[in-house]
Each structure stands twice: as C-alpha cells, then as structure tokens.
Length: 386
Image (cartoon, rainbow, N blue to C red):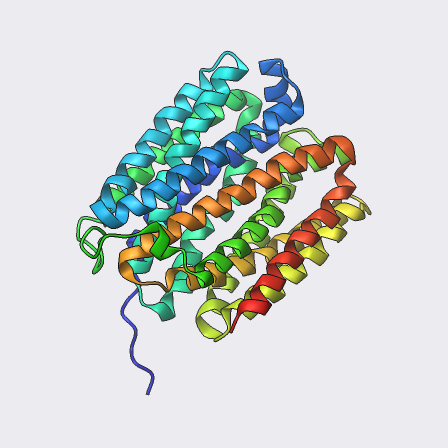
C-alpha cells in the first residue's frame, strides 16, 4: 500500500510563486522596451541588453551567499527582507537619468532577487517530501512563467502609457506584496527551517553529482534564456511589431511555459528517472529552437513554434530542481543557492552571447546555438544518470 503523503503547503507555495513572479518580472518586463530604453538612455541596443548580464552576475553571487547564510541563520530574513530590497532598487532604477545609474540599480535589483529565489526553493523543499517536490517546485517556478504570461504582455500594454519607468514601479509594488505573503506564510517554521543543523560547507555541498546537475542547469538556462530575453525583439525586428503588438505572442509563449512547468512537475514526481526526463525534454527543446529561429513562415507560424519551444523546454526544469533538492537538509539552501548561481551564469551567457550573435550573425544563429546547449545538457544527464 502506498503511504499517504502529507498535505501540500499551498499558501506558502502561492506566496513563493508571487515572489518568483516579482523577481522574474524585474528583468523580463524590460524585454519589450529594449529599443525604448536604448533611445531614452542614449546607448546602443546590445548595451541595454547587457543590463540582463549585470543583473545575472549580481543574482548569482548573492544567491550563493544567501543560500549558505540561510542554512546557518535561517531563511525568513532572506524571504522577507530581500523582496523589500528588490522593490526599493526597482523604484530607484525607474528614476535613473543615465545608463550608469540604470546599470547600478539593475545590478542591485539582481542582487536582491538572488538573495531570496534560491531560499524559496529550499523552504518549499523543507515543507514537502521527496515525492512531492517536483510539483511543489514546479508551482513556485510557475511564477517565472506567469511573468511571461501576465507580466511581460501587461508590461508591454502598460508601457504605452507608463513607459518602461512606470512598469518598473509597478513591479516594485508586486515585490512588496510578495514580501508580505512570505512573512505571513512562514510564521510557523518548517521541519527544517535552516540554521539548526551542522554548519553548511560549500566544499561539502559540491559533490560530483551536484556539480553535474549544476552544469546541466547552466546549459538549460542558456537555451531557455536566449529566447526569453530576445523573443520580443525577434518578433519586433522580423515582423515590425510595436511593444504592444508583441503582447499576445508573448502570452501564447508563456502559456506553453506554464503548461510545460506543470507537466514537468508531474513527470518529476511520477517517473523514476529524472535525468532521462530532463534529457528528452532538452533534446526536444533544441529541435524546437532550430524551427523557431531558422524558419519564419509568418507570424502565426512563429508564434506556434514559440509555444512548442516554451512547452518542451519548461518540462526539463522541475525534474532537475527536484533532483537538486534531494540532498541533506543542512546543505539544501547552499545547493539550491548554487543552482541559482549556475542559472545566472546561464542567463549571462544567453544575454551576452545572444547580443553578440544578434549583432554579428543575425537571429537565425540563435537556433543552432540553443540546440548545441540543449544537446550538451542532454549528454550530461544521460552519461551521468547512474
């Protein structure tokens, strides 16, 4: 007889989803405004796109420190304080009058976002058992997809009246609501609340299986991030769409992402081999990327390819996260903080290399590059799964 599983902590997962939505929206809602920001700040488009690179670096560094700190001191200070810091940085970013000022506050916002995203994953893992973690982490990661489904299209629509500056202020308000939600849902500590076990060691956390999983995460984030950062610009350049005109295509893309995340959570909890599930999803994502950027049969066809790409690539993430979360309690925050750090390396690669490919080769080069990253992740998964 299958043992009965404990109830899922739905309130905390909802608050975590909102926090992840705020963190993701702090960067992805810039996507429809890259051209506008470049004109407003009097810089080139690749330079504005590289704000994502600065954000990713700060995000990765702070997530590593916060993950280890949460294992030692507890998670609530990071879960509540960091979203409030994110809100303050976004307001200051919206007031920036020059590119250096925008870069400074975008970097600080990335640091605040990194200080709680990995910790949220650790908190959700501590409040669930291994057979539930794929779904639990999938629901939290759905906040990233909702940032695409709701955040980016709504930002593109609101930007018509508020400009990119007003959109950042709206996202700051969402971050404040997320902080309040996490404060209310973590009043009762988790069975493992962090800070109570043996002192976490970075060297002890970085075992060969964990390093392999982190490398898989870098490949997956480059493949995924390349499309998230540049899909709106790709549509604008290829089909002459306005920022408001990309809202519906981005919503379709995000629907695929949400469906894939939910499906990936089910796959992670119901199929025994999480590495193989990750590998097959990555191979499908690589093939979809070649179609998306290599063939432009028209706007409807491109949007359909974008939906397919978003669906299959999102399936890969929950099995990877569930595998990473299946570590001893006293290093879970450190490991999941390392995951966010490695993911930030992937975002950095996607933003910086994508800008170089766009300027030097064109959007058609995105497909083979994304496919190569997907293949690398699949090979790492299959060769090391035993």
